[in-house]
Image (cartoon, rainbow, N blue to C red):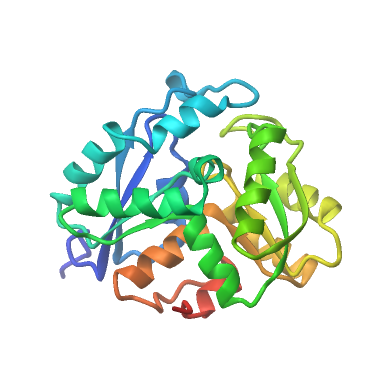
Length: 259
């Protein structure tokens, strides 16, 4: 009897992630069916130290630098040399700092280096997901390592895209990728999101969040969108798999992307 060996897949997703961050590929692997491959390339990120340690809040300069040549471009080219179908840029905050136009230009640049493969980005995927769900009034919850200034830039990003940000704040939970638990994130969101928000946007690909999506949606009765959840959703669409049969990680996966 033959058993699955990891070679027979419907699609392979290449993930561009900070060098000391295990969150993106961990969460994508948790959500994706067994026949969706997830393969990560590590990109230097100046705000991270060995073991994934960071300062309580990250400065803006390394955030901006992460999306600039040469390191992420080199990683995209090398990862695209493998048999992958799409690249996923697993980083939220650079788009906050540079804005949507610069984000789109970066994704085009990476696609050119990746031999023409489609490249999806976290924040552009989030705006597409919000429009697909027809959510206009949003609450933005960012990781505790996002400063008030970075969170403000996130608000600016979504307001420039046409959304009404009725609430925006970093969550006041322990600052560190190993420290946050789904139950604590659920309780914080439920305790802070205003009733007039049509959807909750949880930023930060390094934030442990997808385990809280289903329970938080059930409590609030509204969509909850997280960085790695929308990134996987957009990557699957770009790979030609609009319905991967994902359940238990939010209502978004029952929707086909609006173009």
